[in-house]
Length: 259
Image (tube, rainbow, N blue to C red; front, side, top):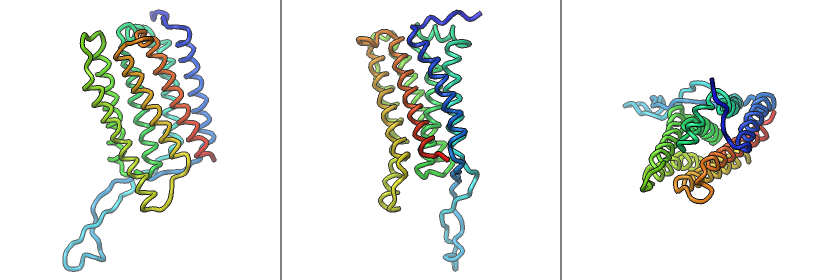
């Protein structure tokens, strides 16, 4: 039998509100967003028939694998985001209690790894990244950065001397996908002589601000100074940042890709 989750009322209400809001946004995304597809390809070398007269001349080519409909990626992200807080308050209640006591909540980081990777992939696709393996690498790097953040939390829980190497390495790793996508944005403007739609830049801002706030909250949680000595305060901050970031991300996409 699962014991009642002993959490501050504010945190319980926040989880309940998050689940409801994410569910509503998932329905709105499915009903209101357009059905635009974005090609996902695999790059390879091919023979340039025109240039290959005396010897084989290779040229870059792309093979279309499938079309990605951003609408359903967003719906899946929001459904997952709605399920997790419900599990915190029900099936995972006892496990969540232990995590709050030990200052390590593994499933919070799992949620961030999956949803963060999905959001990063969506932004990359809208920025013109089409190669499947590049998208996989972006998702993998984001997930790896979250793993390092998890390790940093565990290493510094009840530690006599704080260790920052893992935390800083995770920050560097998290910045790599941003640099990749930024290179596409710059190249599109410089060489393509066009700009992205407004919502792509808005998504950049949403993810950047969310990542910075998340990193700052973890830094203060590791130091455990002031209000951050109370882990329920730390978790409340994580929950608020996650909620605001995902809601802003979803609203921008829904409005930007509305039918």
